[in-house]
Length: 417
Picture 1 (spheres, one colour):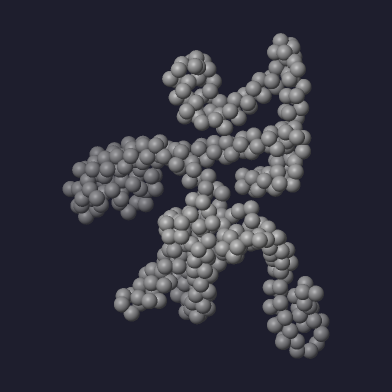
Picture 2 (picture 1 turned 90 degrees about the vertical axis):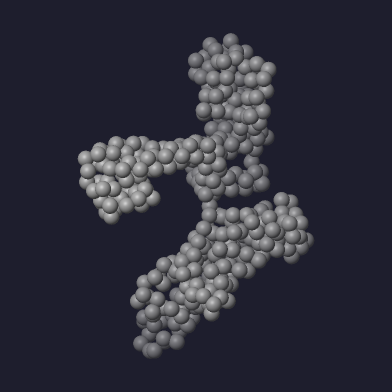
């Protein structure tokens, strides 16, 4: 009935020659179409949280957990909608003619968005103590309040309240631009962001070394630019700090052209530094791309290892299938890729079972079986590398001399180093 009412006004007005503009109000009932997905999700949420306290239910709603179900995902979508819409409004407000026409509407929507974000922020602080790492009425909530994601939540609402309560003391309209930080709230639900943070933490020593080299080159380039161009262009190369701008755009191969050398030595330095910058500035991007790809490969390898455990009894139960679906979604795997992975694991298990009663000599007589057995053994080593404490493994092997050089090389190759 709701689906019919949602479309009936359009067709009635099109085919009946009377004034039915009043029926346009019925178009507002289209919002009830959302209940088709919300009501089942709510019933599922109630079943999952039967017997749990009010605070535990709030925690399940705003934090990902096995008690949240589909309703928790819809809540994230609801927050994401207001984040994206409020950021778009902040951008449109910078267009004077649009802001002049829609100023009241923009202000109302921003107030509603801030109210929703404030409730979300409060609920997160209130219910976070349900997690062990945030235990403690005061200490736990303070720890939650200082996490990066919660600080972002605070920055999303703080400019609004500062402008409301302090506008009579100082002009704080410039704080409106900080509403764009609400876009960072979307990183909480992004698996790619979590992987990127993990990659940066893992590759930080190399990235910091690259950053140091880049800063060194920038300072050297700015110094040479000042040395050779100061007398010829005292207005542009008046000091080294101002020359840093020219150095950065030169090394980054941007070259806006607003500042350029005119002396022979200055142009020579520019050519040399620009060629060096092509390689040096590309190192961090190449490192991140390679490390990101490697992290995804490890995550998928871990999923493969988990599949071995799930299929140990030869079948997937409902809980295992749910975990597999969630992991596949997190790793952006299609249904075809997941099915292919399951088929591969099942095939490898069958081949492993068929080889268990065979000796190495018997396997070696069949070249194809030898290759498959070799791949299987490498897979076992990879699983070992995933599950064991690598640092402790390597330090103990080094201390007691348990591995030969060839064995250490194989281990390093399997680990991808």
